[in-house]
Figure (spheres, rainbow, N blue to C red):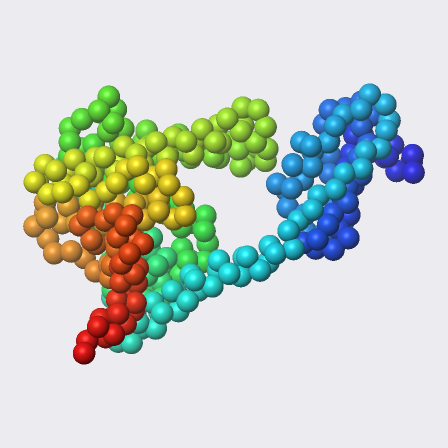
Length: 328
């Protein structure tokens, strides 16, 4: 009805779900404005990104003409989500069962965020970078001074966990810069120049609530910046190992691969940088349940062929099972 359309200032879109994960019918009217609003019933769980896609695909008309469009969503969405969630769920179950067999031995100590100090960096392994992994692990895991309740908070609240990871990122970049004595011209930007632009860029987009125009440039530019810094970081870790006469443990070009290979390289970077600082300090490696459970993390040299052809590198229970099967 014309009255309903007049109620909406400018052009508008009405989206109605005929059935979830099947088909959504949209009706639009474009009188004069180039800005399109969206109204959805509460029972229609239409994500904002689909709303933006609808807005971007509608064609403006010079007259008050209703335009009908349809957005079809794959019926297999829920099935695919369940399939991809099964693997991590099984891995988490095996890890918890493996690690809780000896009971809770985590110490109760004063919390220390361990800021960068001196020229040589501190051990900051995978459990230090992602303390939420240690929330359900009974043995003492880094950060050794972080109480278990704090780790549980990090496990439950993603924004808090992200904040801690950015603190890890700040610490290692500051330590590498101090240790090398080099500056941005050599790829050593330090914690402030690495983390602050990322926080500002993403924060602008999130707070504004829109990624249009300069807000989108700032938001995606922040991710491009942090991604570029990962490339520098992988090469810096390789340089440290080459200075010791050891083979470089990382493949920086994996950063541009998908299907989790880029994350494999990132996980290995955390481990090998922490191991380097341990040798520089003359310390033993701190416990790392994540690296113990996933053997591919600690292999000195790892290739794509190794990941595909050696299943024993994927998880500790798999390696144990294969060892038993090979025993006569």
